[in-house]
Image (cartoon, rainbow over all chains, first blue to last red):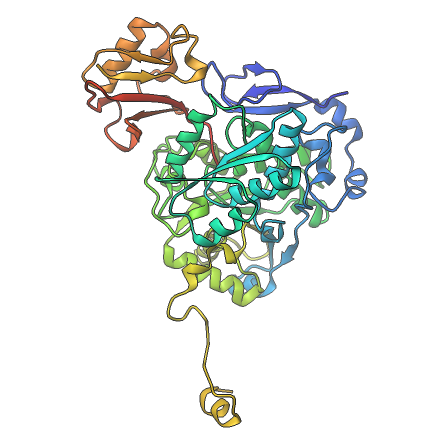
Length: 412
Length: 90
């Protein structure tokens, strides 16, 4: 029995068959995958999940890929959930955890969504994968397309960080550098999707792609001993991921997989240099998200016109979370703080998450005993340039290979 | 006259036409003119208050009109107005 029933518009409820489409023809609202929950509830158990592979595919029952469909995998997911005692001590949090998603095959959270998207697309006969990307998605799409032997077109802003371009290019995709911002790239791809037979991960097959995000929250709950935390800090770009975390929480509770039924506060993190969702959250009309021109080092989340922004604010308010934003300086400080205290090197987007965590903790948001989880979604080597300033090498000294020189230059 | 570029999901309204030329001095009046020619566009693009719907992006010569003057953006001969579903990306 197929577990997927179809697609449904999140706004007006119009229903569509399972196909590569992402927009409701009636109201332009987003389409979501609809599962046969009644049947799934009879089979999904903690034991069944725990006996699965150590990857996102242990949650296969709750992903939009049928049992018989071969998946395209590089072992994504089941990344470490690290108890962060040293960072927690600095922030006054005794139960702080970091979900280190930089440990994925291409070093970002995007491997989760791409593994799901390509598995679905290949099963539907697509021969070419594509995406509009700020870098991490293109990296994952290029790698997984290589793995699957599919053609690949990735579209990126022309001024993307060189490290990201290299780590995309090595997989030999068709790499289209667009003279514009990510929002320009996204608009171009939204128009291209109508005239190409390609599966654009984050456009026409977005309803399937987005579902992969849920595994981050499934894992967090499982790794906490099948418990949900009190609050989760999530970086916000389009908001696509944020929305799926709310759905993951709903499924964990409805399926009886977690103890209790309290919903964690879902809190969003943005860079002030690109904070359209935060701007709306702070205004009188949180559901009126106006676009901005991005200008931030947090390139991987620099989306000026976020498609799911209104849902982020709705969910943050519904769950008791907030949306907060940090300066460029706070981003870099947070990257250093995380590295110094926990040994984790994250990219600028992770700096945004940890920066917001730090800002909220110092503003007295928590008593100290709450369980707080921050999603660290990408590796620091992707954006290493931002640290290459005068003191970018930390406490570096240069010496001659003599004991004398060592004693002169190094303060013990 | 400015020219609208119609996205796939709305081409049923325009009898399959991909581009439609209409009159109008600003974006708002061009949408009214488009709706007179092919009824239904106004409801799909504008909400009850007459603002652009949340899930519709409109670009005037590739610039997001929300970053400019919105519906009061001036339009002229040769301009291309692209309607693009906003739900994409990320």
